[in-house]
Image 1 (tube, chains in turn brown, green):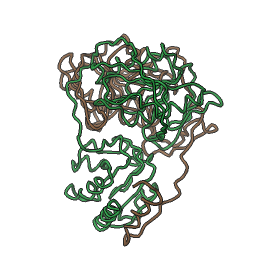
Image 2 (cartoon, rainbow over the protein chains, first blue to last red):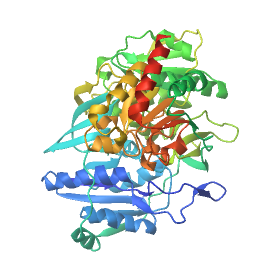
Image 3 (cartoon, rainbow over the protein chains, first blue to last red):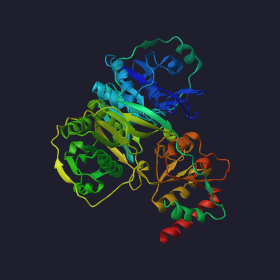
Image 4 (cartoon, rainbow over the protein chains, first blue to last red):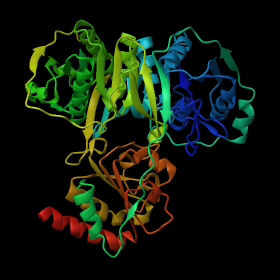
Length: 247
Length: 319
């Protein structure tokens, strides 16, 4: 069984958020790029664990991005995985990206297609579900556990106020979140071997976007904190009740 | 027509769906059409009363097989309903189930999706929906270019609007596929407010020094009907269960009040709570970054301040 892990490049969690091009694009100057944490910590690491446990033979990574996303895919390969596929295309909407990944996955014979629960930049939470529909596969979203017994998967997914345990036969698409695995740091051997792992570049299939970002903006600055003296904490309760009207 | 998916659990429509219904009614008003809802599974609630959120009609598919959400099965039924009822817009709550179904429906109907919407669409030039991006640190205004549009509305970002109208209830004749995903068990925390739906959240950080001191969080939460949460380090060292972790990698929430005790407010924590309407921070370090994001704060020792706050709230509640 082969696993396909979808990898996205995102700005570091501490990156300054600013825009260019008349507020239509994220300003990338000086931005540190990382593997989207949900893709890395949960989807990729769980795939590695499954392979180490003998439940999978190979792990392939896929990303949709221009040549500048290669350092990120090499970084992911340093954690593990046999090979990577980069679909050579700039940033587009979720439907476009999912279409590209589905086109690669279609005849790839993958038993598991894993994504993070969302990217930390667009927060769409859509790619996994879209790929599943395109390939007519079951989809378990926001999973916190994934175990395999041959062709049978047991998953735990988050629901309001609790969790649900599911069983389903492969192939499936899963979006992964906290609980699935623990973060790993790549070791020197991994980093060295990542350089020589195959990274295949494929051209995108023709797809029309369904949505487009018209503009971006920042929330208005907060008016500033109203500090209450630690001598009179009851004043805070009064303000929350009478002024903010939240209790 | 604007169609809204009314999500249910244990026979009851979820609160986030009332918000989605109110939102759908407003979108319908903008477009000069009507809003209708669809409920899947066996529901005990009085569906006609959903008219009070502005729904003209509620379509139901009563079948126990639909009491657990299966993304594939639900998508097919909702797509069939949207097509046969000629919906131009389909609305979801961007909750756990909405995040499962809406992307699939987007593909099935080839309808553009904006997930995480926070405001009504601007229809003066296209169909532009405002959504949270960069984990609440910015907004994107996104144009949906397709004939059918799908919006998934962030919970607690649109107020429920009610009137005394009554909806017509109609059975929708759907073909129900057998779910490939089998639900073997569900495990819910009973008696507590689910964090994702809570209007008030009381949260503790490492400043509380140990799990034995959590009474100041849970006591206050109980008094004001709040859910409890915690910062990432607290969950990582197992002072509190993982499902309470809010932040970049935990749950992102947007309550009316977020009350943070002993949390410094690292940028990753803020990413999960910055959509809260009012933020209160109790921290003894005046340099704690959280104060910059807060509306109200006390620079002081939680161990001294919190008992007095709890006492004041108790008095207030006794009226």
